[in-house]
Structure formats: structure tokens, C-alpha cells
Length: 271
Ligand SMILES: O=c1ccn([C@@H]2O[C@H](COP(=O)(O)O)[C@@H](O)[C@H]2O)c(=O)[nH]1
Image 1 (cartoon, rainbow, N blue to C red):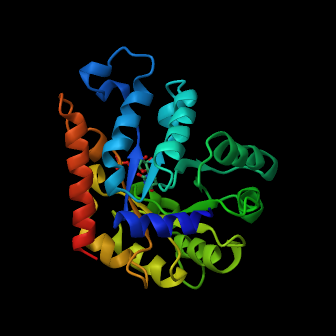
Image 2: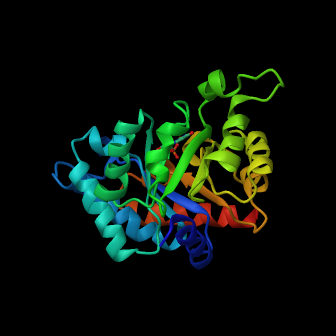
């Protein structure tokens, strides 16, 4: 199934726009998993199982796996999601960006090796570097636009002669020229609701991946009001650490489920 269709179905069936981020940090794992060689897989598998009812997508951040030499565990997790939660889109957060020949390999890594439904990419090397991802016609290409970190303004706020900031150029290009597959989406941070609203005004109903609630302190009602599309959906609002590490004690599974449900409910209350 194509990415946007799978996402639409997930929004509807889960009644949720929460994306659960997988940023597994072994130093923060519960005692029962310490020292196990499969700890990353087991931690993330449990998190996926308990939060899936409240989520519209799962977003593994690849650095947390590769830094631990745990790419095999990420592969196993993606297989697990496909088998046990087939309706949940997998968004591989890799923020790739390189010349076309290398981008072809990154696209194969995301879509063949990890069987992701979508991958995050950087737009700053231009359209030819996005084409290898776009040639996978059913796969989502999620382009960095207005990131959630404060330093994002260093470049993304640079204005062209007509006063348009760079992040809005990216939004316009993504909506008007680059979306050759119809599967593009944009990353905009929940820490900047005003910019979310400006991006939404430029891109119609295009899906937005919105990190920055939870540990980064983004405001949920402001985010939802700024980012919802004409259908009242259109967002994958990501929370990682606030869900993964809701408790470091024996009740970590229940605490993660509770955090995911409360976040889903807070998002829905603002719709
Ligand atoms: O602008 C961006 C783009 C990506 N991220 C990623 O989202 C999660 C956020 O984690 P939290 O624990 O919920 O803060 C993480 O994987 C980032 O790499 C982002 O934060 N901002």
C-alpha cells in the first residue's frame, strides 16, 4: 500500500495522530534488560506493542541503532512491525542527503533493507538528490523544512530578496515541483507553531511530520491548531523520550502506554 494511503488508514483506525519515536538509549533501559545482547530489540518491541493502539506511525531514529551496532535489531523490529502491526507506517528517521548515486543506496537501505514506508531527507543539495527516493513511487519522502531545534533558524530563516524565508521556499518547492510521486511530506517542529501554520497555508493537505512535543516542550494545542489540514488530520506528531522513558522502573511498559494514550488524547482534544 502506498505511504499516504497507509497513513490515512492509520489516522482513521487508531483515531490518532501520535507518532511514537524509537530512540533507544541502553543507558536508560530498565534493569531487567541491562546486559542483554538483544536489549534494543526487546525494549522497542515492548514499546511498540503497548503503544500501537494509540499511534498512527512508528519512527525509528537510525542513529540510535547504528551507534550501538544494532542495525540487525532495527531490521528485526521493522519485520516485527510488518508482521504484528501491519497497519502502522514505519517512518525511518535518517535525514539523508547526498549526490544521486549515493542517494540511490540510501533509498535502498530505507525501502529494501528496513522496508520503511517513508524516510526523512534533507533538501539542501537540491532536487536531483531527492529523485532516487521519489523513484520509489509508493514510498514517502519526508523533507526537512522547519526543524524543531533552535539552531534551525540559522539557515532556515535566511530570507530571499522578496523576504521569503528559506523554509517557506522548501515548503513551496515540495508542494509545487518536487512532489512527483505524490508521496512527499514535510518536517516542521512543534516548537514553532507559527511556522507550522505558514507551512500548512502553503502546502494544502500534505502530511506533516511534527517532532518537538514531549521532551522538547512543544505546545500540543497550538501545534494541532496550526497543523491540521482540511480533513482535521494531516499530522504525524512525534514523541520519543517522553514515552520511551516515562518510567525507568518495573512499570515501564504501563507508563509508556499511559504516556502514549495521554498524548493521543491531548492531540485529539485540540482537534
Ligand atoms: O526537527 C526535528 C527533526 C527530527 N527530530 C527527531 O525527532 C525525535 C524527537 O525526540 P523527542 O525525544 O521527542 O524530543 C528525535 O528522534 C529527533 O532526532 C527532531 O527532534 N526535530
